Length: 224
Picture 1 (cartoon, rainbow, N blue to C red):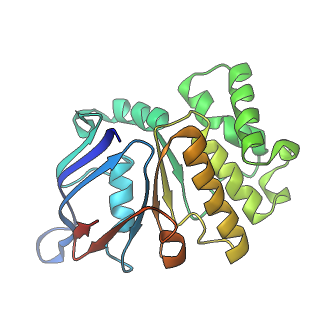
Picture 2 (cartoon, one colour; picture 1 turned 120 degrees about the vertical axis):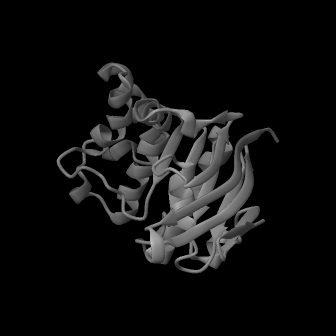
């Protein structure tokens, strides 16, 4: 497999002086194109912190994150935002859909931010919503959708620009076990269809065990 993301001596701390807390302590990791990876560890181990840095939502205290050999944290904030919007899809425990917009409009949003025409954005959103099983729900607002359907809209929104990387932070944590399992199956199907690199933070050992690789975070270090 081709190397996609390389993390080199990554450190992250919060606070200063006596209140300084070191969360990540020199992490080295490599992720490959099309890979499926679970990031696991105890609460407070830094799983979400690592995911946010991989997604460029936060900067490390020290170290590098290379995407295709490019050190992305040498980019300024505007360049980084453009990179993030185009190359990385995010799914969170809470779907963060805009309640005043329907499923189609929520899914189109990253395209419009990117400057894609409304016509093309609509076509892309319709296609990905059909792929996640919501072809008949395009005009429904979040309040008219079930929890599982709302999360499917969030998945569609994350994938509408066909990013290389899909980062999911407890994507099933707010769902009942049956619905959560269906979302997890969907993510793996999309990984196969789109060859998107899937990196999932989860507390659920049963879900983590379904992915070929597990990275354990403990004491600020990563193993796996």
